[in-house]
Each structure stands twice: as structure tokens, then as C-alpha cells.
Length: 268
Ligand SMILES: O=C(O)[C@H]1CC[C@H](C(=O)N2CC[C@](c3ccc(C(F)(C(F)(F)F)C(F)(F)F)cc3)(S(=O)(=O)c3ccc(F)cc3)C2)CC1
Image 1: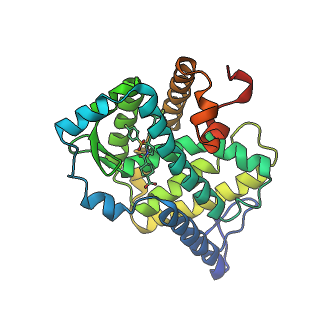
Image 2: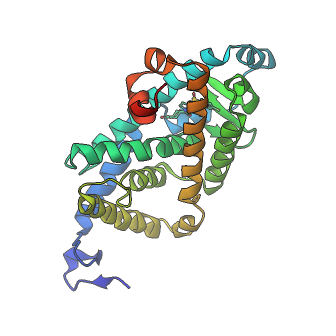
Image 3: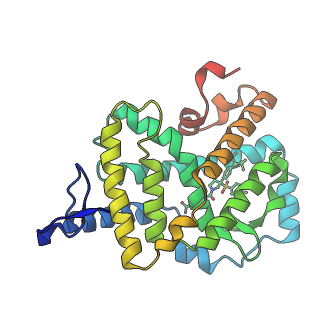
């Protein structure tokens, strides 16, 4: 069990080589929560207010009639905007900008899609299985022209699991930051710097859960592998789509999406 310092200023636990004061924990908590709330595209309360505004059958039909490449292009544009905000979240996290640039990209390439899934769950209405899309809440079959119903239903299932935990914005902020600042990512050049940030986040997050009597959510959060498998299916679908529309990735995909999800060597 964690060793406690006699000194009242160090009321938190003392980890082998990370001395973290209560004051630092509070500052870190503020930083993580503000970085999250300032970079989400939609406020939780606004998403809640409109969550019963669903697309009509004829509107759904309209989306289903759109050609595959047209629908993909719209979704890739939305995903790019969402990821731009996730990059902004990362930049505001204490310590992220001090990491070496290679490691910043490694962490964003690995974590951006997982954080997107977490943010999608905020925009999900688990009572009628609809998700916020272009102003209203959409059922799964609105997206059928994308040709990746299995990917999207896996996303919907994940959103259901996350809704069941009913994460607060504070918890969502910490969960996102800890997924992003994962020291076990391969190719990191300064793993110990990421490790140090992760440890502090872990202590601050557990501190928050203890104070709010929410330790039980740690066992209910979806396994990391589940998030990763959806990210893998995303990459496969993207590859299939690009084979159907060769060259589109370069002409009509925003550079950030390309940078994070399209690797040069395999591009046809
Ligand atoms: O920051 C916020 O407040 C949040 C950020 C996240 C936003 C969001 O939900 N999203 C931003 C982009 C969104 C998105 C999700 C998934 C995908 C794909 F899987 C595929 F195209 F295959 F579907 C891909 F990845 F393969 F391309 C593309 C784009 S979307 O809003 O376009 C959306 C698409 C399908 C849905 F069924 C539900 C939502 C999800 C909602 C607002």
C-alpha cells in the first residue's frame, strides 16, 4: 500500500520517485478538466437538451440515398474537426507540449481515435440508440450508405457500455488524458517522461474517485482492447474505402486525417 509521508503538505501517497503534493494534484485536476471542457465541440448540457430531436424517416431516407463517397467525405470532415479538437485537448494538458515532438505525434496517432470514441459516447442517446450527427440525433441505419455497418454498430455498442457507467465530465476528462498519455505505446523515445505524467494523472484520478465515492467505475470502464479493436476496424474500412475510390484520400481528405490515419507507403 502507498507509503504516506509524515509531512502534512504531502497528504497524498508517495510513489517511489514521484512526490506529489495535494496542491499539485488540485492544479492537475483543474488543468485536465478545463482542457476537456474547453475543447469539446458541444457542451454536455446542450447535447442533453436536444437528445430527443431525432431525424424523421424521410430525412433518414435522404441520408441513405447519398452516394458512398459523398457520405464518407462528410464523415471524414466531421471526424477531422473532432480530432482537431482532440489535438487541442492534448496541447492543453500539462506536460504534453514539453514532450518531444515525435512522442507527441506517436501518442496522438495511437490515442486520437480512442478519445473520439469517448467523445462520441457523450453525444449518444442510449434510450433510443441514436447519436448526434449534423444537428439532430441519428439512428444506426442512417449511415448505411457508408458500407461499414459493423464498425458503426460496434461504436454504438461501445457508446452503450460507456453510457452505462454514466461518466461525469471530470471522469471523462481524466479517462481521456490517461488513454492519451499512455507510456506503454511503442516507439516512444522518452517513455519515462510520459510515465511520469501518467502516474500523476493516476494519483489525481484516484483521488477524485475516492472523494466522490466513484471508485467502482474503474471496474466498469470498457477494456482498452475493445477501444483498440474498433480503431483497427476503422483503419480496415478506411483502406477498403480508399481501394474503392483510389486517390480520394489525397484530394478530398483533410491533411490532419491523412497524417493520423493514412500512411504514405501503402497508399495506392
Ligand atoms: O467534441 C464533441 O463534442 C464530440 C466529438 C465527436 C463527435 C462525433 O460523434 N463524431 C465526429 C465524427 C463522427 C464520425 C464517426 C465515425 C466515423 C467512421 F467510423 C465512419 F465514417 F465509418 F462512420 C470512420 F471513422 F470510419 F470514418 C466517421 C465520423 S460523425 O459525427 O461523423 C458520425 C459518423 C457515424 C456515426 F454513426 C455517428 C457519428 C463521430 C460528436 C461531438
